[in-house]
Amino acid sequence: MSTVQIVLGAGGGQSQNAKAHTWTARLLGWPGGREIVGAAGIAIAGVGVWNLYRGLNRKFEEKWRS
Image (cartoon, rainbow, N blue to C red; front, side, top):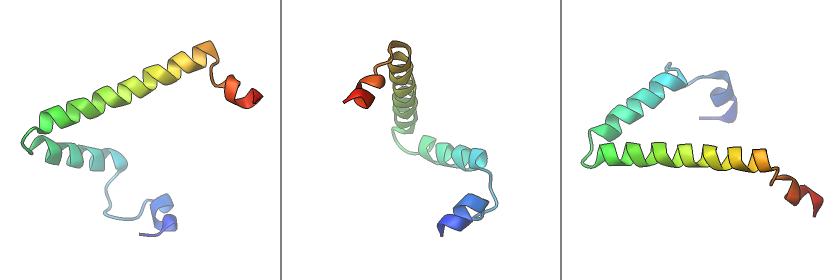
């Protein structure tokens, strides 16, 4: 699939939300699937909290100054 097709939304006719539901359902069907989906959710939440911390403490500015 080309970049243009991805940007224009081609490929399968499903929305990104529907694709996420499909993949999540597939993963939940695997042995240990609940743990995999749970770990992914925790990782995403952790990245969000880390970025919130960096934003509130303006840690990102340290890289700009050097």
